[in-house]
Image (cartoon, rainbow, N blue to C red; front, side):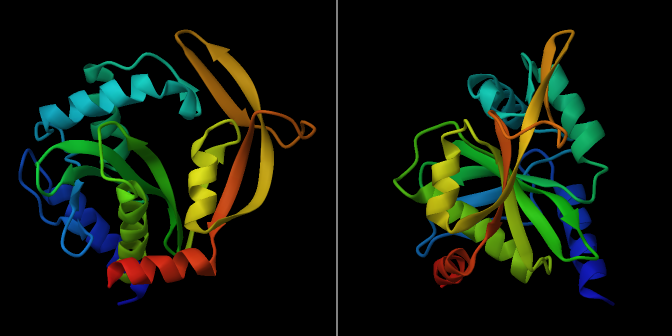
Length: 225
């Protein structure tokens, strides 16, 4: 069995087993454990109402950080989880729970996985509640380490809007900018979409494509212990 097949099977199994307060896997962050990366339930009829509520609230709070801007509601979030995330074996989403307080304070995931190429990207990284200094960084490096060790992904990146303050966060973690593509605004009923358009001259906002460099990989291995 190839690494790609094993990684894809693991991702599917983790997603399918997740349910309200029932998890096949939690990835510990830190030693001693500070937080848990908990897989989000995405199967219809098995969603976690608290997660749906938090995802909706935080997406609305940080709406301009996304490539699609709209007013989210819980029904729309639930539909996104069950119809977009659940069947997609190139994406997975985790909630971040404080290991001591038991409170959920953020979420992050993986997307754009190319199993044959062994590549993927960090995606949907949001801190919605209070967290210890540096904990989001440690959590992301832990997630990327899990993607490398368990899913077999050797090339890990991220894409972020140039006007998003998170750009500096990724640079400090060891991501290296590869290229930028200007974003074109598309207005639709109840939504704004920002679409990469290579025909446009360099301008703002743009989509910044980044790749985790060796310094970030070394930091991730250190975080793993």
